[in-house]
Length: 457
Ligand code: NAD
Image 1 (cartoon, rainbow, N blue to C red):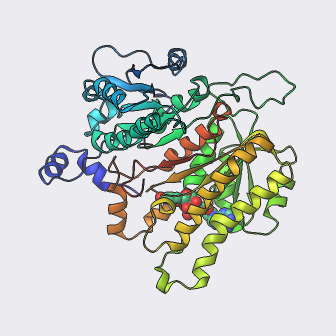
Image 2 (image 1 turned 90 degrees about the vertical axis):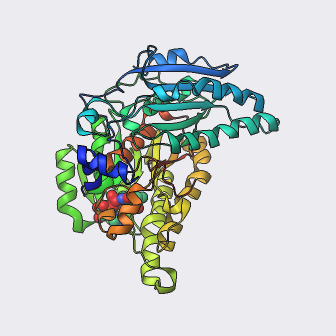
Image 3 (image 1 turned 180 degrees about the horizontal axis):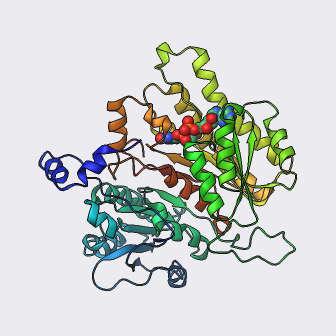
C-alpha cells in the first residue's frame, strides 16, 4: 500500500504546501541494503558521569568510524555512571551542543538519496534497588529518551539501552547504529550480563564457534508462522539473508503463496493451521534435526466494539494470536525440538500495550504475548538455553493495515515520531537482531517497531 502523502511531501510543491499548512513532514528513511550496509557518516562517543564500561572496542566493531567536528551519523552517550540528579546536568551538557549536528533524513527525493536519519543512543545502568537516587537518575534517562525522540524529528531516532557489560550489548548496539533500525525509536532495551557470547550456540563441551558477520544465522533453522505474506514473509526473507534455512508455515489455503516464498528462499513450506491441537507435534515431526529460531508471527484481527462483538469474533483472535503461541511453544520446548542457543520471538502489537477501540479481542491477545514473554524468558533461558522476546509492531504497511478505513489508516500512519508507517522489513530486521547468536543477553524484552507511536509508552 503506497503512502502517497510521503511521496507528495518529497516533491518541491508538496513540501511547500504541507509546511505552510503545518502538516507532518516525514523524512524518507534509509533501510539496510547490500549497497548501504552502514549509516552514512561517523560516530560521536560521549560520556556523562564516571563510566566503568569499556565501550570503545565495542563501538569500533560496529563499523562506523569516529565523526569529525561536523555532522554525525550517530551519537552514543554513555550515561551508565549517572547516580544522582546533579549528574543529569552532564547529560544536558553532553547532548545540548551536538543534537543539531546529528544527521537528518532527506525530506526531498534528492536529499533522501543522500542521507538517512541519524541515531542517538543513550546507555544507562539497571536501576539500583538499594539506591533510590541512582534509580531516579537512571529512570530519568527514560523520560529524556522518549521526549527527545518526540522532538528530534527528520527521521532521527533516539533509544536507551540499559546494560552492565559492553560486549554483551554489542549485537544490540550494532543494530541500533545501523540502517536496520530505521523505524525503531523511543525504546528502552535491557541487556543482561554477558555470560552468553557469540559462540554460545555450540554445545557446552565444544569450543565456541565464531559468528560469520554476513551470514550470522548460517547452519540454523528458522520456523516463521504466517510467512506466506506480509510481515512473516519479510521475516523469512531477512532470516534467509542472514543464512538461516527457513520453514514457511501458513494455512493450507495460503499454500500457493507459502510455496512461492519457500522456493524463492531455498526453504520449505509447512502447511498447517497453527491452531490445530497437534500443531506442535506436527512441527516437531517436520524438523527431526531440531529448530533454532521459532518466530510466532501468524495473527488475525476480527475488529468490532465489545458491545457488538459476538463470541465467534472474540475467540478466534485469542486462539490464533495467543493460545496457539502458548501451545506450540510448550510443545516444542517439552519435545526438546528447540535447540540450546535457540530463540523464540513472538509478535505483540502496540494495540496490546496502549489498547485500541474496536480491538478488545486483539488487544487482549497481544497483551497476553507480553505476559508470556515476561514470565517464560528467565525460565526458558535457565532450563533450555533459549531466549524469549517479542516485537510489537505499530502501523506497518501490509494487507492487514490496507484493510483499515481511510481516515483511521491515515491517522495510524502519521501518529508517530517519524510521521509514517513502517515496512514489514523493519519488523524483520528487529527479529533478526533478536535471533542473532550474539543476542543471548537480550531476553524478556518487548521491542516496539512503531516509529515511536504516540499511543502508549
Ligand atoms: P497478514 O494478515 O498480512 O499475514 C498474516 C499471515 O498469517 C497470513 O499469511 C495468514 O494466512 C497467516 N495465518 C493466519 N492465521 C493462521 C493460522 N491459524 N495458522 C497459520 N497461519 C495463519 O498480517 P501482517 O500484517 O503481516 O501481520 C503479521 C503479524 O504482525 C500478526 O501477528 C499481526 O497481528 C502483527 N501486527 C501487524 C501490524 C501491522 O500493522 N500490519 C501491527 C501490529 C502487529
